[in-house]
Image (tube, rainbow, N blue to C red; front, top):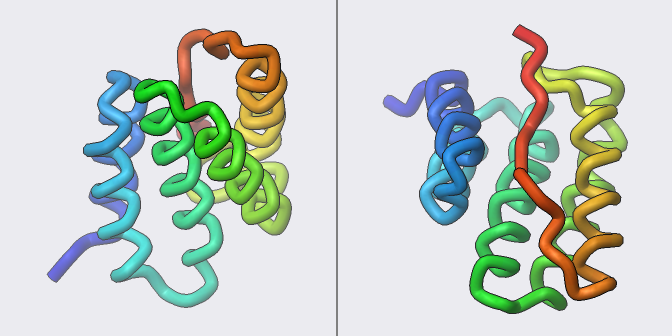
Length: 115
């Protein structure tokens, strides 16, 4: 059986290491096993990881589309959810989008954890 909380923690660690594809996989496993009320939150994290994976491959349009999806889904989980500072993450996602719109790298990608 998949433990969504453990997958979430592993996904966050991978994301912070810049291993976005692997983080995406962990978040997706957590999403599949999570209760319905947690799914948009976990999908938002899937989108964050996918956005950075796309950006790392030069697909800035794909990165911005994924980041926009993440921001929309995070809106229902503000200001904090599952130990994640979702308000800060939403601000970061918006900053990523602005950087990508200018053709820039947004800097270190993190997801603020409040544990």
